[in-house]
Length: 332
Image 1 (cartoon, helix red, strand yellow):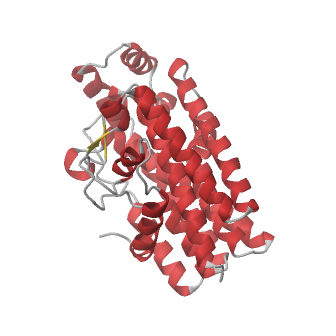
Image 2 (image 1 turned 90 degrees about the horizontal axis):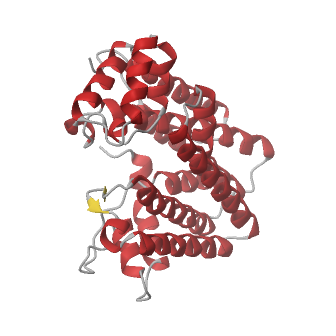
């Protein structure tokens, strides 16, 4: 069941996205298909993602008596930035499918996908500008930080980072937009510095929890649980957080085996299964789940001290509980 937080704001965010992406200019239909507003024939659909980040902005603004029209403009701009990042990520990761649909580069080629991403980002910044200079400035900061995080992530393909380096990358690549979502809500509400700082911490901890959770499921998650095959990130040779947890506790023999598997141009099914089995034997699922749940506890603790009303607190708590991972009974 979808958390109430996302259901509450979904229709308003969808309407905002339809407004910004309307028109018949080059690539507009391509952007609407990518977001999930249309199918490839141009027929209207509503097959979007969870809209987590804009929903967070709207909840914070509403909880702190901010102007919801301005908050919606800021939230839509933020979601467009997120969608821009997915378009370029798909090119860099050579992912042919997203949300059950062909990615833009797989349909239109890499060059047009880059153009589509550039257009999405430009539309996002134009929308943010109508919400005010401070909103635009904060979103630009987040874009810079997010790109820096992506640069770090790509660089890990050529070396083995430490867990601290991986966390720093997550704080940029994923955390930048989560913190921005919180900041935009407090900016619109003209919140005091203390409240802004509290929500910024919440954004940071959410970013870490969401990314580490996704990384765990990208390795251990089965088709039934996630819609992802087991070992997805191993096949892609990604040095994600769970793999670094494994390397930290592995024997020299296990480390060599994992290194050799990821150094191959293509990771075979057998090598992938061996790496996943080694990670399971090293209790990576349990360790990763503990990290996810610790960050979620930090969110809940900070929420108790924040100026969040009863409804907002209940909806944020419900969402956090839905993100928890059971540490017992993980993959073996």
